[in-house]
Image (cartoon, rainbow, N blue to C red; front, side, top):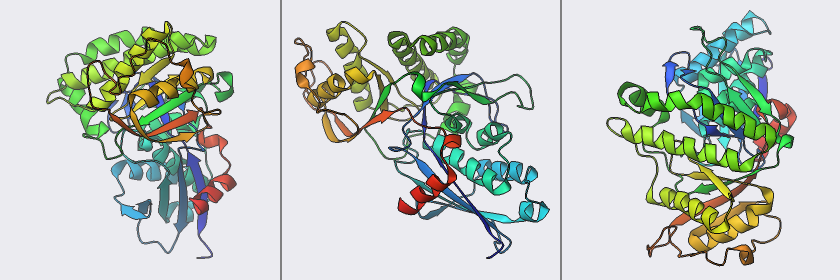
Length: 380
């Protein structure tokens, strides 16, 4: 239709270093605790979205990777919020919207596809409505973690205290250029995770006796991460990320019935990190795992070759994607490195990593021009 409006957006997933798990208000998506994340490389992992509004549409419609999907209550909340804020007039505010989204990485596999997906969804529809005000709040309504993908580098989402959620917003903690880090994404399973995050965290809040202990230690942990980011203290950042990841999965295991996201391969990667750090006499890698089997490793650029070389000795890796620079140099592997091919002491079977993605820190959705998002949509 000549009257239709079209807008585009792109967003990268973000990786939580201090994780959000549990809500104080499910309808408004208000978390129990602050969280801190890094936004990943939008050239390697991204969601691109095209949103179209037209008076000819009979209903809202969403498709993902070319297939129709349910328009969820969360999506409807985003649409309703932006219709109320629409700056293009009441006619457009009443039009139905069609949203087409494409992911360049597995969906619902614990790779934070909801953060990039709902972030791009919110930004594209906000551009239709010609309003980017309150976008952090609006994106949060779609998926809590989506508000962090608005920003490049390091972002913090504040839990807030107000019952209406106005003070629960995300902001940039440090730019991507502040600290040149790498994230090595170990994809061990590309299928849907065992339990959707929304249902699992609600069960945790209702049943876990360990959750209050986790919440009580988070203020100090958050402060330590902020300090580590400001001072570029990798050892501290890695330790806090690993401790918080371990704590999250302990709380999940304490949920009744328990929630298990990590697999044998996931745990082998975690053990691998501790063994490599011990053999190296320093912190070479950190790890963190969200609600899924895949494990993300934190590294400084100078250690990517070492990490990749050791991973290749310890695991069966399907493919390596991303900028490694020079080929992985196994000569940097510590002389006493076991390299037993299993990721764990005494095991004989090599665990498989389907893909190893080497990511830089990336741009936020607000930094990616609409024209670039449109070009990506047409080419993906």
